[in-house]
Image 1 (cartoon, rainbow, N blue to C red):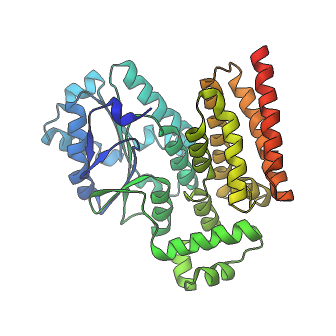
Image 2 (cartoon, rainbow, N blue to C red):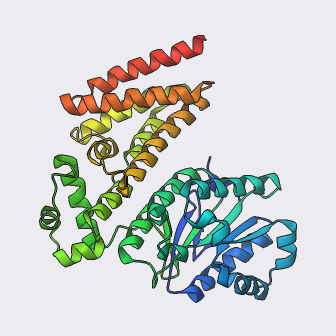
Image 3 (tube, helix red, strand yellow):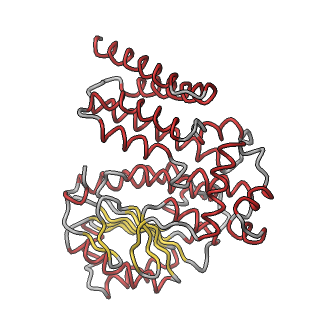
Length: 381
């Protein structure tokens, strides 16, 4: 669905939000964030849209006062359910720590509830300074942002995650900004930026070396040499190799699903054709990428430490692939979409591994044939 066609124009920080509406707001302190976000908040409320704001508990009253000063009937909006203002403890930090799954469920429930109340969309803004403290689960933040980004695709609801440049680590902000398709920088809405030059060189070196040699076999000194950066520059961008591995897995260039699904959807003439076209697109991607394989499957084999920050990113991405297959199956009329999606992903994962081992797309094409046999059997039931 083209979300822009289903709503009136939505303006933020000098730009229009169209199909993509997950925004990383980077601001020099609270005053700068309100200068940019207050007009966006007021426009939505006046247009009859829902609003969810998640704020520092110490600033809830001042937040409401700012809305009142901007002309919002705060009491009426709160009592009528159009506006909900939660504090961190009732959202991100329920139970004393950050539970990314519970927070994602809260966002989904809020948006669904808004539509039940007659609001065609809900504008969500969350101030993220809670993530500067060492609360349990805070290490899952980048994975959470990645999962939210995947869940928001095709949805009309904008979500703005507000980060204070003075309070968050530069390396974390680089990773977080890379996950979001849009960012507010210097008060202006921008598309997904290329990372800063040294960061980009390091990520490119990681992509090449991790893909060719593997994660364990690639040392930091080699990464520094190939990237052409100083050691101090490397550690300013990535305090540890684990941080780099996570950033590499979250980098848009590593996320092959977008490329494959785009090619599959462009060539499929009907929903029934999407699954076979998807397998075809996987075979084409593997061949074009010189059979380096799936970075997430490769990382899952190498990373055995259960506390490694990248393990959740791997699981989240593989779940995203399964979810895409499930949606494609549902669109083509398959009632048992969930078990079929699991079976297709198992076929796909095995075929990718065999294609890498033998350096040929034939295993993926064989898996395509097996997948179609499964789907025909489901149609006959």
